Image (cartoon, rainbow over all chains, first blue to last red):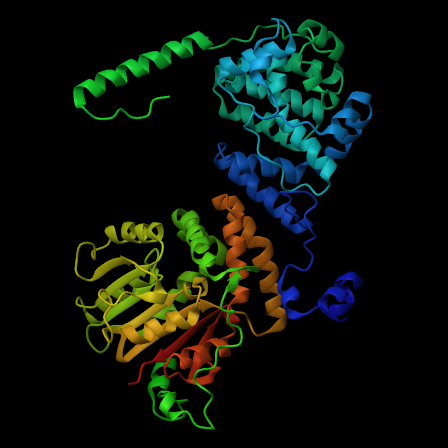
Length: 293
Length: 305
């Protein structure tokens, strides 16, 4: 059987194009959205395996964790898209495509809101943990633009769940949240993190995780409203307790333990102290102090 | 292995002595090679860019890849690049006729320079051969310095490093007619103007000096070429993403291989610069020798006068 007979007819037409076009990737389709890198099935599998190994060996490789999520997400993303489309709020999210970053979130406005509102809670959480809304990498490897947006939204809303439950960013709470995401959203990447993550924490933290948080997580994930369709940016002024009731979530049985409370005042004091130390160095050495911010 | 000796044998050479001898049976010497750029634009992979823009873009590619260059080479070629470089240097056989003054251009992380020095030392007990490594990119040269620091050549007169452009090697540091051997491995396709590199090489080499270029080429077998294309465009950018978090640089790499002139065209360009090469064929007595079915080729020429 000739080689040509096995190639789909559409591609045979492409083979007759001039030489320069043949040099290019024949079956790489055009990008569907900015930043899209189309992959065929083999490349998708290769990247899934490769990024999985890279992420296991070095969990700090955020780009590899993201790539693993995207290359394995195609089973769960259509379902999530349907969930988003099933409510008017979710449909508004999909239509308006809000993004979460420092340009779209006016932190000062949120800080000025009354306490116990969701917006103020979120702003406080950002200040306490020192996280910025900018830490989520863009989606590259998902073919359908709507599913790509759902993936992007899932990534960017992670911090909202932190604020909702009052979890700090230490590892056992991240894992509890990963378990929640795995069970609630069904994304394979969340399952990987939830199953493999506990192997990297010490025994006491693992015990705390399993005893205190996992049972609660499992129930909340099963019983709450689909969070992918929540338009968080419309709810800044909503009272937090009321929001939790509406969404069907409730607080964990054990209060999350935060580390040292680093409020804005403490940060200001630390900055002043560093500046004073730099002044002393300047006086002593007669040189410019290093940049201390 | 014998291609260089064959190139030096007097019979059946295509001699391109100089423009004075151009006759009706010789190819015109000042032909601009067909694949070469229009004066104001050139290619950067599959993109078309201004001629002056290419150099900084190549610079940034190599600054990005410098720290992981060797790891990526091993991964992408499954270690075969080491075999190619070993073959390249042993076919040149440096040290056989006494100590050489070598110029390794686009030397980068020092693979060829180190092999030249080791070959001369191990095979001919030659500790006088000198290699000057030249690279346009300071980060790559820094990786080369680091590599040499762990060898016995560190701080000896046998190795020297310079940041310079292969197209315009400065005459004060690289005087004319001073080098016995000029090597450029996997570097010439990144240069904006290949004829200028070749002219610069011609100037710097002594009469009797050898120009040797190891470079990627396209396999001649169409089926193998198809497999190679698939591998190049699918796997290599993904390896770049996974190992080096850098897809763009490796996409540029595979595209630049396709834009490089074919083996006969490049052989003609070498002749146009004034070198004498073997015949227009692959293998013994030929102007080039293909490796691994044509994935890489070693082109060589001699400056006769």
